[in-house]
Image 1 (tube, rainbow, N blue to C red):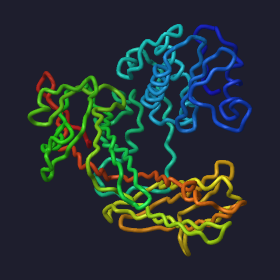
Image 2 (cartoon, rainbow, N blue to C red):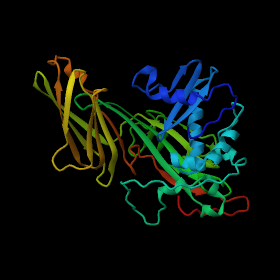
Image 3 (tube, rainbow, N blue to C red):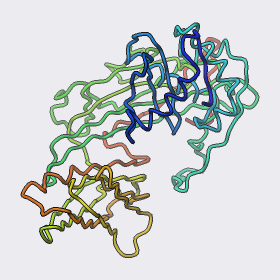
Image 4 (cartoon, helix red, strand yellow):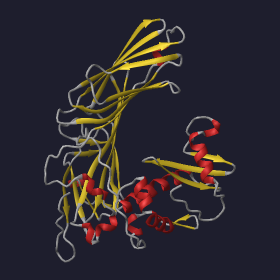
Length: 414
């Protein structure tokens, strides 16, 4: 283990070995363990983040949701103080992280997980680790715009000489969930979005953030008006003040140190579906099936989908699978998992308005029956689209209010 802290001395050191043995080979089988399991009276609760396991062990009967939420907040605190969340950054900052753990937990009792509160008790400086560059880089639309990698600075640099100029970053993240039937017709669509911020402003000044003026809260409240952004429901961070939200769609707040979510929202109305999937099914012979999956990117041409992963199950009687992506196609890979009976198709990048096709030939050990169509599918698709949000929710402006002396901050970029 990289970090290990025993607060009460109630457990044996072998719990680390027990966990590693069972997390991949649970109950003696080659399968992953559930997020919470019990072995010999010890409760193991874990979360995997960036390939790193965060594990909480206890012999007490505690709330599982409390334990998982605590582990999630631990990862956020580590990221705030290290800048980058990776194994290398954790190994380089183990003294700082041990100091954080001792302030967060006292004798097994949680004291607090707020990065803003912890800064008064932390004295070790972080060791900055550079983030590995990805092969795919976003285009730079404005050379004066600060790179998004700037958010990888530790928050302790905020008031230090190494921190540089005042900066603040705002991001809108949206997770889309869409269900189609076998004919390609839309059955269900939803957007779960967040407005996330990270502040490097000295003095923690008051901020005002304005959203779309034509923003309505509550399903059916817009009555089909053009240009209106309709949100089913939303919630805000505890630091947010909503005095002007109903009348002007402006939220006021004093940003805490570290990364935090200003607003969560959910939309279930109609919106532009970024991808379409078209499956075609052919029965070549009693022992052979051919499945053709076509993907079309219904997004603007100046946008691109990245890290696209398509998965679908095949019949249990499958003996072999062969897949082809087309002649001259690059940046695509296919893989068949014979144990899980699952086919995975990965596409690195896909531009708006383009199409890609996967042809999969399936060989069966037994002659197929009339139910073979039900054994193939559903087809799932995961993707990322930078600089694109289908909800049309926008930040009109972010205004930094003057402090008590009348002086206003002038951040370099936000």
